[in-house]
Length: 392
Image 1 (cartoon, rainbow, N blue to C red):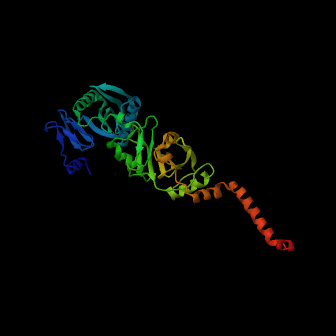
Image 2 (cartoon, rainbow, N blue to C red; image 1 turned 60 degrees about the vertical axis):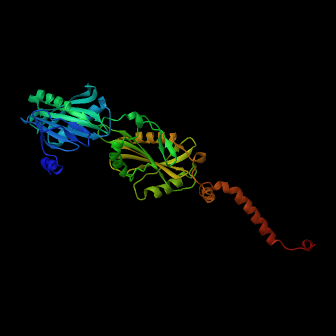
């Protein structure tokens, strides 16, 4: 579908500076006033393409998920996104000339300048400004040939001046602190992690769905994120599942981790578990590595407690496997269970007998010796020949 057809399908006709009022981009919570001398052949609730009447300068507004404050590292990452878009459009020799953070009219803004060959031929320039909006980061780009660089810079400033945010970025201070599940456990987060904003839950659920956890039920779960500037995020997700597995300790760990793997992961590609201590009471959590999730590092810890199992996922970039393990370990060490007596996992009498028989048979030695002694006495009594003395 062409840009014009998309605009018409959405009820969004081409617009120009002569039209009444600004354009409203609902997904971004943004009103955009079109500068004089520009028109917008295509726009939607989430992006916009503009061009000047002389067709020398193009303008584009896009966004990436997750609310991230501009920083030098973020500015570099956002500049690389522009590089990727230019290369995908068939342009060549793309280079980032500069990137950084500036204060523009009281708003912290990441800026970048790129040079490239337009369609592999003419020298061209791209200027970018990136700033935080509610639950996202908006990217405003102006593009043109290098000989029109001054005009391109002025276009960027004019369009930026016409942006008005209907929804200001949220204060992230409210996303810090302990995470509490209504399923009777709570945890604290490692540095750099926070609760997701309501506007961020869509991509969070999409990531959770990749490991079968797309529905995040607040009555059973808590969830936390550590966003990447590229528009992705690392994810911590801890949920309750009603399953009872008996006693898990150093003796039974090897056998129980296979039992848990079959229970939770079925035919998925999962390696052997390693033990992680969970909470101050010393209970053990088998930690599994899921290797069948392309491009992702996935670690899963399973902690027995009063209501069954607390299953905690740590999901991040493939290169961040060690960081995901560290985050998972921090969460488990900080977890408290709010049930009576610390919420121990139910272990029945039969579970205890099974544990001794399977995993600590040495404890049966005294019992076996006593039984053998009794058996010997019984056999001796049976085999003993009667005598007249016994009849007295």
